[in-house]
Image (cartoon, rainbow, N blue to C red; front, side):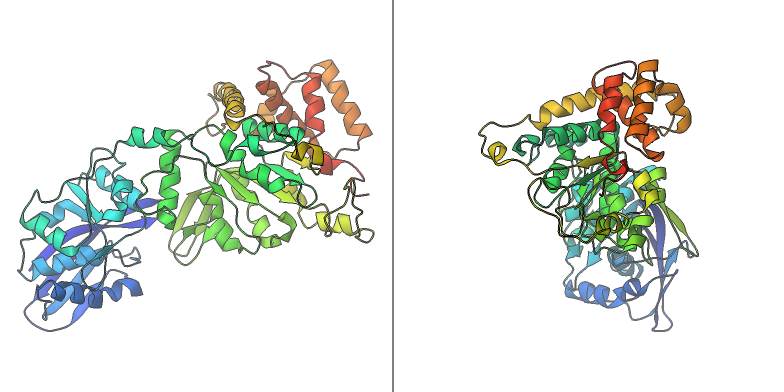
Length: 513
């Protein structure tokens, strides 16, 4: 007897429907799983046998063939336990399996029949709705996440017994109901940290506001304890809120990576990822035998913070160059190629030298001659080219630390950032793929970053006097455009150029002594 149902395989951040069909024949005793299964799928026989027998059903001792199609797509993980178990019970005549083919079913079984959570529930739900299934049955821990997809019945289950009863007595399970918009808007503005926690550092906070307004990558350079990490952690609190579409995109990535909290349904705040400097290039960019998203994809629509930038492996930093430009990363294997989104803002911090006190107003640097330049050279020129703002962070004076007044809250700064972003959305409406000033090409800069005579003169004099490098030119223009947007100015003015120039510290000749 042949019984069929459907599962789902995740490739990249998308899901593909998998046909699971089982034939139990009266001759023979072997158990076969075919269709390119990995070891976790092959081992499911023992888990399924224990779960079935503990419920009082019998495990078929006849020749059993489990086929998983398409056969050229590798089936990985233990999430196919539940659909295989149901088909086995139905194929051996113990339950009626006619309705199994109308559902997508996924879940890992423990030995007593308890159903354990799986990865990628959201893309599975999207695929099930697209293909017109009656519903999606999956672990209760993943149900709210999958229920974010409208017009699909999602059933959350905790035990194999519940699923068997559902197919024997329809109506015993009720679909999980989630109000997507209410869930989205309920926590989007709730942050545990705020910019008003930062004492002093007014110039640096202004630079972070510009970075958020234009989507500019930034480098904070200064001595230990100056507040670099504290400022970077608060950048997400002034970025524009996620749109519902962005929230779904971000949730899909975290779901596939298994990083979504248990019982969570939707990521409503921009992600902030801060990997340790010992991270490998695969963990940072993504990959593996079965391609998984890396930290740059987990930071999609949010911020990737690299603390102590020169301490990262050079290879790990260099592989980020292309994803920063293209806003995606492509992982290629012999039989497959997947794309992971990687539209993130890069915020990095570093000490100016190994001892950390070069250019410190009070402490003396103990590094030998030439050490500062060698330390800065650990970060390659091509990567530095992709960083628009280079901000020198100085220690906060004691008087500022002792002040009892609070700074400007994140909410007020965010409103200015949103207003500047709205200007950019209108500006680039006719340019697909361009969302903010940091993404402008040279062609767009020639259109939207035109300078009047006083501005040209100021920029020329600054380039000559400060010995700014050629790569600083484009960055200054982009940042100037953002500063003008924050001021709601139609054209770039000399004061906007002047402010942008001060955010190119490392491009100044002899900055390192």
